[in-house]
Image 1: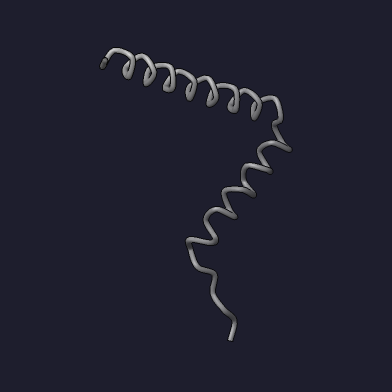
Image 2 (image 1 turned 90 degrees about the vertical axis):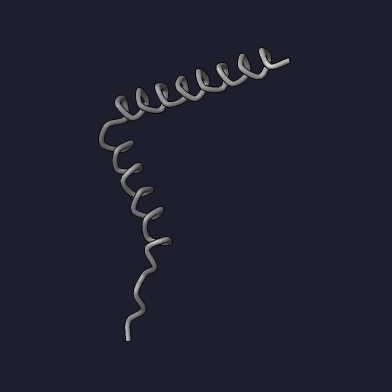
Length: 56
């Protein structure tokens, strides 16, 4: 009997394979996406710091 893969273990593996494929096929677009994601996270972090500073 062949064991079936659990979805919780399979999904991250599939996402990782898709990301690697995207980076290999379109490295410039992948770099743009990563830069935009990082800038978005920095914007959220800056807004949280501003919010926390305004509380006190």
